[in-house]
Image (cartoon, rainbow, N blue to C red):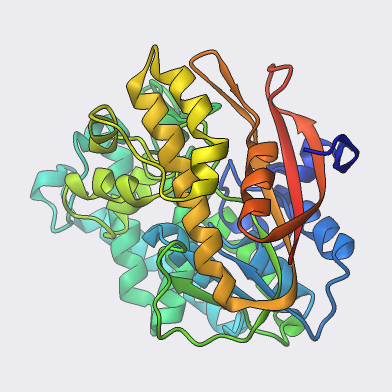
Amino acid sequence: MDGQRLVYRPLPAEYSTFKCGLDEPVHRWFRLTPSFGPELVREVLDELSVSNDQVVLDPFAGAGTTLIECQLHAIKSYGFEIHPFLSWVAQTSLTWDLDIDSLRIKREQLKERFAYLTRILPDNLEDAPVAIPKIHDPYRWWRKDILRDILILKSALNDVADSAQVESFLRLVLAGVLVPDLTNVTLGRLQLHFIDRSQHRINVWSIFDRHLVRMIEDLAEVQKKCSHKAELIVCDSTQVPTQLNIRPVDCVITSPPYPNRYSYVWNTRPHLYLFDFFNEARQASDLDKCIIGGTWGTATSVLAKGRVEPLFSAVTTCIVPIAEKIRKSDNLMANYLVKYFNGLSKQLAEMGRFLNKSAKLAYVIGCSELKGTYVETDVLLAEIMEKMGFSIYQIRRLRKRNSGVNLYESIVYAKKS
């Protein structure tokens, strides 16, 4: 990689990460810790000179940061997302045409309904007419008394909502405070960690209501800004439906999973099961097998066996030599690396049919270390992009990740050749 194209231009973590969104309307509705921040999206939109008559695509849309920013700035945008809960979060966060006065009335109705159900339903969850989430060992995830209140609130939401949009909005309020406020976990560096909350004072309604008021206020602020509704398509970005018809894309702004074994499935398990996206234990590990970078559950045992072969010549050239070095001590992680870059390469190839001939790309990516081997993800992705017909004009390293000297977070800027 030409050293002149590799630059270190820092952006503080409070601007480049999810932290930036914690104080911004709509972005703060749901906290997705590994996501990039809205300030970073704004920087990229400016860097790529994206205008209001252009179209933006985020093929790893997550909770919708890119799409929310585009909708705020009247820029047409599309997103792809395979994760059923995150795609629902994004779709709900992009729905701004709800009636504010009606939502304020619903808040009062919901308060009354929650108080009524709390009084009449038995304390013992097993005797109450509520469905306990089908997650393994639910009482490890939630205190019994807290889970009772959560399920009562969930039932009350269904009772007072008079439309699917209102129900989704109210459910998103609950989803936004579920972790860590109401669940026996804390948000660690890579994964959720269980903690003892037996002595914590937790008032489910108060926590929910504060977030509900905040979200209604945000909605009142932003709904008049929406002139281009973003569109979220629930699909695997490496296998986009052939019948999908979208406008040609001028700009791609995205952040695929990093090769650090972070599991979006593991970290959203309480949401997936509480909100009925999943009702069988195996569904979580089945999803992780499909996600780029997924290694949780049975995905781990699959990768531990045999040898994952490269699907593209670019992966053979750029990735296999590093994988073979790792394979000497760990077959699973060698397979993980090849599978990861196979997935990114499939996504790049699949996306080509949606791009304008002069399309620009910005991929936010993080370097990693696997079994003592440095994986310079930004440079490797740039090399693969070049071999697949893209022109790289800059790799901007934004910040050092955690304590690793070489673990940078970067933006790979490219053009369609």
